[in-house]
Amino acid sequence: MTQIKLMNKIAAVGINQFDRSLYDVTTEAEDPNGIMVRSANLHEVEFGKDLLAIARCGAGVNNIPVEDCAKRGIVVFNTPGANANGVKELAIAALLLASRNIIGGVEWANTLETDVAKSVEAGKSQFAGTELLGKTLGVIGLGAIGGLVANAAKSLGMDVIGYDPYITVEAAWSLSRSIKKASSYDEIFKESDYITLHVPATKETKNFINSGSISMMKREVKIINLSRADLVRASDLRDALEDGHVSAYVTDFPTEETVRVPGMITIPHLGASTVESEDNCAVMAAHQLIDFFENGNIVNSVNYPTVKMPRTTGNRIVVLHLNVPNMISAITASVSAAGINIDNMANRSKGDYAVTLLDTDDPADKDTIENMSAIEGVIRVIQIDH
Image (tube, rainbow, N blue to C red; front, side, top):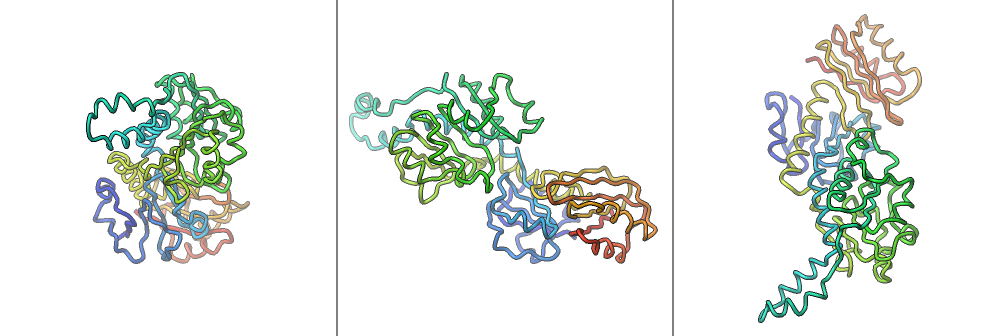
Protein backbone atom coordinates (compact mmCIF):
# COMPACT_ATOMS: atom_id res chain seq x y z
CA MET A 1 0.00 0.00 0.00
CA THR A 2 1.28 3.46 -0.90
CA GLN A 3 1.92 5.62 2.15
CA ILE A 4 1.04 9.34 1.93
CA LYS A 5 2.10 11.55 4.83
CA LEU A 6 0.25 14.81 5.58
CA MET A 7 2.61 17.49 6.89
CA ASN A 8 -0.19 20.03 7.43
CA LYS A 9 -3.93 20.01 7.73
CA ILE A 10 -5.06 19.25 4.19
CA ALA A 11 -8.61 19.91 2.99
CA ALA A 12 -10.73 16.78 3.32
CA VAL A 13 -11.92 17.01 -0.27
CA GLY A 14 -8.30 16.46 -1.35
CA ILE A 15 -7.68 13.54 0.98
CA ASN A 16 -10.90 11.94 -0.24
CA GLN A 17 -9.49 11.68 -3.78
CA PHE A 18 -7.34 8.74 -2.70
CA ASP A 19 -8.65 5.18 -2.98
CA ARG A 20 -8.14 3.94 0.57
CA SER A 21 -7.69 0.39 -0.65
CA LEU A 22 -4.52 1.58 -2.42
CA TYR A 23 -3.35 4.50 -0.27
CA ASP A 24 -2.81 4.97 3.43
CA VAL A 25 -3.13 8.72 4.01
CA THR A 26 -2.02 9.74 7.48
CA THR A 27 0.02 12.19 9.55
CA GLU A 28 1.90 9.29 11.19
CA ALA A 29 3.70 7.55 8.29
CA GLU A 30 7.35 7.01 9.27
CA ASP A 31 8.75 6.22 5.81
CA PRO A 32 6.17 7.53 3.32
CA ASN A 33 6.17 7.16 -0.43
CA GLY A 34 4.57 10.56 -0.87
CA ILE A 35 4.12 13.77 1.11
CA MET A 36 1.39 16.41 0.95
CA VAL A 37 2.39 19.75 2.44
CA ARG A 38 1.21 23.32 2.67
CA SER A 39 3.46 25.60 4.75
CA ALA A 40 5.49 23.13 6.85
CA ASN A 41 9.25 23.61 6.50
CA LEU A 42 10.79 20.49 4.95
CA HIS A 43 14.36 21.77 4.77
CA GLU A 44 15.25 20.15 8.08
CA VAL A 45 13.19 16.98 7.55
CA GLU A 46 15.11 13.76 6.94
CA PHE A 47 13.52 12.00 3.97
CA GLY A 48 13.31 8.22 3.92
CA LYS A 49 14.64 6.04 1.12
CA ASP A 50 11.13 5.23 -0.11
CA LEU A 51 10.02 8.83 -0.65
CA LEU A 52 9.22 9.35 -4.34
CA ALA A 53 7.15 12.51 -4.48
CA ILE A 54 6.15 15.67 -2.60
CA ALA A 55 3.03 17.64 -3.50
CA ARG A 56 2.86 21.24 -2.32
CA CYS A 57 -0.74 22.44 -1.93
CA GLY A 58 0.05 25.89 -3.30
CA ALA A 59 2.37 27.54 -5.81
CA GLY A 60 5.41 28.55 -3.75
CA VAL A 61 7.95 25.84 -2.92
CA ASN A 62 10.51 27.78 -0.87
CA ASN A 63 9.68 25.51 2.10
CA ILE A 64 10.95 22.46 0.16
CA PRO A 65 14.58 21.58 -0.72
CA VAL A 66 13.74 21.31 -4.41
CA GLU A 67 17.22 20.79 -5.84
CA ASP A 68 18.20 18.24 -3.21
CA CYS A 69 15.01 16.35 -4.00
CA ALA A 70 15.86 16.34 -7.71
CA LYS A 71 19.28 14.83 -6.99
CA ARG A 72 17.64 12.09 -4.93
CA GLY A 73 14.93 11.30 -7.47
CA ILE A 74 12.08 12.86 -5.49
CA VAL A 75 9.59 14.62 -7.76
CA VAL A 76 8.26 17.88 -6.30
CA PHE A 77 4.86 19.07 -7.49
CA ASN A 78 3.07 22.35 -6.91
CA THR A 79 -0.45 23.51 -7.79
CA PRO A 80 -0.18 26.62 -9.99
CA GLY A 81 -3.48 28.32 -10.62
CA ALA A 82 -5.45 26.41 -7.99
CA ASN A 83 -5.45 29.39 -5.63
CA ALA A 84 -5.21 32.04 -8.35
CA ASN A 85 -8.69 33.49 -7.93
CA GLY A 86 -8.29 33.86 -4.17
CA VAL A 87 -5.00 35.74 -4.59
CA LYS A 88 -6.44 37.84 -7.40
CA GLU A 89 -9.29 38.99 -5.18
CA LEU A 90 -6.87 39.90 -2.38
CA ALA A 91 -4.75 41.83 -4.90
CA ILE A 92 -7.77 43.94 -5.84
CA ALA A 93 -8.41 44.55 -2.13
CA ALA A 94 -4.73 45.51 -1.75
CA LEU A 95 -5.03 48.09 -4.53
CA LEU A 96 -7.95 49.67 -2.70
CA LEU A 97 -6.21 49.53 0.68
CA ALA A 98 -3.18 51.26 -0.83
CA SER A 99 -5.38 53.99 -2.34
CA ARG A 100 -7.95 54.81 0.30
CA ASN A 101 -6.47 54.55 3.84
CA ILE A 102 -9.42 52.36 4.72
CA ILE A 103 -7.58 50.71 7.61
CA GLY A 104 -6.62 54.02 9.19
CA GLY A 105 -10.17 55.26 8.85
CA VAL A 106 -11.67 52.17 10.45
CA GLU A 107 -9.20 52.31 13.34
CA TRP A 108 -10.01 55.98 13.90
CA ALA A 109 -13.78 55.37 13.73
CA ASN A 110 -13.49 52.71 16.40
CA THR A 111 -12.10 55.30 18.82
CA LEU A 112 -15.20 57.50 18.60
CA GLU A 113 -17.58 57.34 21.56
CA THR A 114 -19.96 60.33 21.46
CA ASP A 115 -21.46 62.42 18.65
CA VAL A 116 -20.15 59.78 16.30
CA ALA A 117 -21.93 60.97 13.16
CA LYS A 118 -20.82 64.57 13.71
CA SER A 119 -17.24 63.50 14.44
CA VAL A 120 -17.14 61.39 11.30
CA GLU A 121 -18.18 64.29 9.08
CA ALA A 122 -15.62 66.57 10.74
CA GLY A 123 -12.72 64.14 10.61
CA LYS A 124 -13.14 62.03 7.47
CA SER A 125 -11.08 64.33 5.24
CA GLN A 126 -7.87 63.13 6.88
CA PHE A 127 -8.46 59.73 5.25
CA ALA A 128 -9.13 60.97 1.71
CA GLY A 129 -7.48 58.88 -1.00
CA THR A 130 -7.31 58.38 -4.74
CA GLU A 131 -9.33 56.32 -7.21
CA LEU A 132 -8.07 53.47 -9.37
CA LEU A 133 -9.88 54.69 -12.48
CA GLY A 134 -7.43 55.97 -15.08
CA LYS A 135 -4.31 55.07 -13.09
CA THR A 136 -1.60 52.84 -14.55
CA LEU A 137 -1.00 49.43 -12.98
CA GLY A 138 2.24 47.64 -13.75
CA VAL A 139 1.97 43.86 -13.39
CA ILE A 140 5.27 42.02 -13.03
CA GLY A 141 4.68 38.33 -13.73
CA LEU A 142 1.77 37.31 -15.97
CA GLY A 143 1.22 33.72 -14.91
CA ALA A 144 -1.99 32.29 -13.49
CA ILE A 145 -2.36 34.99 -10.82
CA GLY A 146 -0.78 37.98 -12.54
CA GLY A 147 -2.91 37.46 -15.63
CA LEU A 148 -6.12 37.43 -13.58
CA VAL A 149 -5.05 40.56 -11.70
CA ALA A 150 -4.24 42.35 -14.96
CA ASN A 151 -7.61 41.51 -16.50
CA ALA A 152 -9.51 42.45 -13.33
CA ALA A 153 -7.70 45.78 -13.01
CA LYS A 154 -8.55 46.55 -16.64
CA SER A 155 -12.20 45.92 -15.83
CA LEU A 156 -11.91 48.47 -13.02
CA GLY A 157 -10.87 51.12 -15.52
CA MET A 158 -7.12 51.04 -14.95
CA ASP A 159 -4.54 51.25 -17.70
CA VAL A 160 -2.57 48.03 -17.36
CA ILE A 161 0.97 47.33 -18.49
CA GLY A 162 2.57 43.94 -17.90
CA TYR A 163 5.94 42.26 -18.25
CA ASP A 164 6.95 38.63 -18.00
CA PRO A 165 9.99 37.34 -19.92
CA TYR A 166 8.88 33.77 -19.25
CA ILE A 167 5.21 34.06 -20.19
CA THR A 168 3.68 30.90 -21.64
CA VAL A 169 1.55 30.79 -24.77
CA GLU A 170 -1.45 29.75 -22.67
CA ALA A 171 -0.99 32.69 -20.30
CA ALA A 172 -0.58 35.11 -23.20
CA TRP A 173 -3.84 33.93 -24.76
CA SER A 174 -5.69 34.55 -21.48
CA LEU A 175 -4.71 38.23 -21.31
CA SER A 176 -7.03 40.99 -22.46
CA ARG A 177 -5.91 42.46 -25.76
CA SER A 178 -6.03 45.92 -24.22
CA ILE A 179 -3.19 45.15 -21.79
CA LYS A 180 0.04 46.77 -22.93
CA LYS A 181 3.06 44.47 -23.08
CA ALA A 182 6.14 46.18 -21.63
CA SER A 183 9.56 45.52 -23.11
CA SER A 184 11.41 45.46 -19.78
CA TYR A 185 11.05 45.76 -16.02
CA ASP A 186 12.39 49.31 -16.27
CA GLU A 187 9.43 50.28 -18.42
CA ILE A 188 7.09 49.03 -15.70
CA PHE A 189 9.00 50.98 -13.04
CA LYS A 190 8.92 54.24 -15.02
CA GLU A 191 5.30 54.23 -16.21
CA SER A 192 3.29 52.80 -13.32
CA ASP A 193 1.28 54.50 -10.58
CA TYR A 194 0.83 51.08 -8.96
CA ILE A 195 3.11 48.04 -9.23
CA THR A 196 2.04 44.52 -8.26
CA LEU A 197 4.46 41.59 -8.04
CA HIS A 198 3.53 38.06 -9.11
CA VAL A 199 6.86 36.25 -9.54
CA PRO A 200 8.41 33.40 -7.53
CA ALA A 201 11.12 33.91 -4.93
CA THR A 202 14.42 32.84 -6.49
CA LYS A 203 18.06 33.89 -6.28
CA GLU A 204 17.42 36.13 -9.27
CA THR A 205 14.34 37.85 -7.81
CA LYS A 206 15.58 38.32 -4.24
CA ASN A 207 15.51 42.05 -3.37
CA PHE A 208 14.13 42.71 -6.84
CA ILE A 209 12.55 45.89 -5.48
CA ASN A 210 15.38 47.96 -4.00
CA SER A 211 16.69 51.53 -3.93
CA GLY A 212 17.81 51.23 -7.54
CA SER A 213 14.50 50.06 -8.95
CA ILE A 214 12.56 52.45 -6.71
CA SER A 215 14.60 55.38 -8.02
CA MET A 216 13.14 54.73 -11.48
CA MET A 217 9.55 54.79 -10.22
CA LYS A 218 7.13 57.70 -10.11
CA ARG A 219 6.84 59.72 -6.92
CA GLU A 220 4.08 58.37 -4.63
CA VAL A 221 4.03 54.99 -6.37
CA LYS A 222 2.11 52.23 -4.58
CA ILE A 223 3.59 48.73 -4.44
CA ILE A 224 1.69 45.46 -3.89
CA ASN A 225 3.58 42.29 -2.99
CA LEU A 226 1.48 39.17 -2.50
CA SER A 227 4.21 36.83 -3.74
CA ARG A 228 7.07 36.57 -1.23
CA ALA A 229 8.75 38.88 1.30
CA ASP A 230 12.20 38.30 -0.23
CA LEU A 231 11.25 40.12 -3.43
CA VAL A 232 11.56 43.46 -1.63
CA ARG A 233 14.50 44.88 0.35
CA ALA A 234 12.55 46.13 3.35
CA SER A 235 15.15 48.68 4.49
CA ASP A 236 15.14 50.40 1.09
CA LEU A 237 11.36 50.44 1.04
CA ARG A 238 11.17 51.99 4.50
CA ASP A 239 13.49 54.76 3.34
CA ALA A 240 11.34 55.33 0.25
CA LEU A 241 8.20 55.56 2.38
CA GLU A 242 9.84 58.07 4.70
CA ASP A 243 10.84 60.41 1.87
CA GLY A 244 7.54 60.00 0.04
CA HIS A 245 8.86 58.30 -3.08
CA VAL A 246 6.62 55.33 -2.23
CA SER A 247 3.23 56.27 -0.75
CA ALA A 248 2.06 52.78 0.26
CA TYR A 249 3.29 49.19 0.41
CA VAL A 250 0.91 46.27 0.85
CA THR A 251 2.35 42.83 1.50
CA ASP A 252 0.93 39.44 2.37
CA PHE A 253 4.18 38.44 4.10
CA PRO A 254 4.78 40.38 7.34
CA THR A 255 8.28 40.31 8.82
CA GLU A 256 9.98 41.99 11.75
CA GLU A 257 11.05 44.72 9.32
CA THR A 258 7.58 45.49 7.94
CA VAL A 259 5.12 45.38 10.86
CA ARG A 260 4.15 48.65 12.54
CA VAL A 261 5.83 50.75 9.84
CA PRO A 262 3.86 53.82 8.68
CA GLY A 263 2.77 53.34 5.09
CA MET A 264 3.14 49.56 5.17
CA ILE A 265 0.00 47.43 5.27
CA THR A 266 0.84 43.89 6.34
CA ILE A 267 -1.73 41.18 5.67
CA PRO A 268 -1.13 37.88 7.53
CA HIS A 269 -0.60 35.63 4.47
CA LEU A 270 -4.26 35.43 3.47
CA GLY A 271 -3.78 35.19 -0.29
CA ALA A 272 -4.84 31.57 -0.60
CA SER A 273 -6.73 31.42 2.69
CA THR A 274 -10.15 30.79 1.24
CA VAL A 275 -12.14 27.61 1.49
CA GLU A 276 -12.23 27.39 -2.28
CA SER A 277 -8.47 27.85 -2.73
CA GLU A 278 -7.56 25.29 -0.10
CA ASP A 279 -9.97 22.78 -1.63
CA ASN A 280 -8.70 23.39 -5.17
CA CYS A 281 -5.05 23.06 -4.13
CA ALA A 282 -5.66 19.86 -2.17
CA VAL A 283 -7.58 18.23 -5.03
CA MET A 284 -4.96 19.18 -7.63
CA ALA A 285 -2.10 17.96 -5.41
CA ALA A 286 -3.87 14.67 -4.76
CA HIS A 287 -4.53 14.06 -8.46
CA GLN A 288 -0.88 14.77 -9.30
CA LEU A 289 0.33 12.22 -6.74
CA ILE A 290 -2.21 9.63 -7.86
CA ASP A 291 -1.28 10.00 -11.54
CA PHE A 292 2.40 9.73 -10.67
CA PHE A 293 2.10 6.67 -8.45
CA GLU A 294 -0.31 4.86 -10.77
CA ASN A 295 1.02 5.93 -14.18
CA GLY A 296 4.38 7.63 -13.66
CA ASN A 297 3.01 10.78 -15.30
CA ILE A 298 4.49 14.06 -14.12
CA VAL A 299 2.52 17.31 -14.40
CA ASN A 300 3.32 20.59 -12.63
CA SER A 301 6.65 19.48 -11.22
CA VAL A 302 9.14 22.18 -10.27
CA ASN A 303 12.23 19.98 -10.49
CA TYR A 304 11.44 17.46 -13.24
CA PRO A 305 9.93 17.93 -16.71
CA THR A 306 6.29 17.48 -17.57
CA VAL A 307 5.87 14.07 -19.19
CA LYS A 308 2.56 12.29 -19.73
CA MET A 309 1.88 9.20 -21.81
CA PRO A 310 -1.27 7.06 -22.11
CA ARG A 311 -0.81 3.54 -20.82
CA THR A 312 -0.49 0.98 -23.61
CA THR A 313 0.40 -2.01 -21.43
CA GLY A 314 0.09 -3.00 -17.80
CA ASN A 315 3.82 -2.56 -17.26
CA ARG A 316 5.42 0.86 -16.99
CA ILE A 317 8.98 1.78 -16.07
CA VAL A 318 9.75 5.33 -14.92
CA VAL A 319 13.38 6.41 -15.15
CA LEU A 320 14.50 9.66 -13.52
CA HIS A 321 17.91 10.61 -14.84
CA LEU A 322 20.33 13.37 -15.72
CA ASN A 323 19.85 15.16 -19.01
CA VAL A 324 23.03 13.90 -20.68
CA PRO A 325 23.85 12.39 -24.11
CA ASN A 326 23.27 8.70 -24.90
CA MET A 327 21.03 8.16 -21.87
CA ILE A 328 18.02 6.95 -23.87
CA SER A 329 20.08 4.42 -25.82
CA ALA A 330 21.61 3.10 -22.59
CA ILE A 331 18.19 2.71 -20.97
CA THR A 332 16.58 0.99 -23.95
CA ALA A 333 19.62 -1.27 -24.41
CA SER A 334 19.32 -2.53 -20.83
CA VAL A 335 15.67 -3.38 -21.40
CA SER A 336 16.39 -5.12 -24.69
CA ALA A 337 19.22 -7.08 -23.10
CA ALA A 338 16.65 -8.58 -20.73
CA GLY A 339 14.57 -9.76 -23.69
CA ILE A 340 11.78 -7.29 -22.94
CA ASN A 341 9.95 -5.52 -25.77
CA ILE A 342 9.26 -1.80 -25.48
CA ASP A 343 5.73 -1.07 -26.68
CA ASN A 344 5.80 2.71 -26.23
CA MET A 345 8.06 5.36 -24.72
CA ALA A 346 8.34 9.07 -23.98
CA ASN A 347 11.24 11.24 -22.92
CA ARG A 348 11.29 14.82 -21.71
CA SER A 349 13.99 17.01 -20.19
CA LYS A 350 14.10 20.14 -18.04
CA GLY A 351 17.43 21.74 -17.29
CA ASP A 352 19.78 19.18 -15.77
CA TYR A 353 17.12 16.48 -15.33
CA ALA A 354 15.03 14.24 -17.55
CA VAL A 355 12.40 11.52 -17.36
CA THR A 356 11.89 8.51 -19.59
CA LEU A 357 8.66 6.48 -19.53
CA LEU A 358 8.66 2.97 -20.97
CA ASP A 359 5.64 0.73 -21.51
CA THR A 360 6.80 -2.87 -21.87
CA ASP A 361 5.05 -6.07 -22.92
CA ASP A 362 6.40 -7.89 -19.88
CA PRO A 363 7.36 -6.67 -16.41
CA ALA A 364 11.03 -6.14 -15.70
CA ASP A 365 12.55 -8.41 -13.08
CA LYS A 366 14.64 -7.22 -10.13
CA ASP A 367 17.94 -7.74 -11.96
CA THR A 368 16.81 -5.63 -14.92
CA ILE A 369 15.74 -2.79 -12.64
CA GLU A 370 19.06 -2.97 -10.80
CA ASN A 371 21.00 -2.93 -14.09
CA MET A 372 19.09 0.14 -15.25
CA SER A 373 19.65 1.83 -11.90
CA ALA A 374 23.40 1.21 -12.25
CA ILE A 375 23.64 3.17 -15.52
CA GLU A 376 25.74 6.30 -14.98
CA GLY A 377 23.42 9.27 -14.78
CA VAL A 378 20.32 7.31 -13.74
CA ILE A 379 18.96 8.65 -10.47
CA ARG A 380 16.01 6.38 -9.84
CA VAL A 381 14.02 3.62 -11.55
CA ILE A 382 10.41 2.93 -10.61
CA GLN A 383 8.35 0.02 -11.95
CA ILE A 384 4.56 0.27 -12.04
CA ASP A 385 2.87 -3.04 -12.81
CA HIS A 386 -0.82 -2.24 -12.70
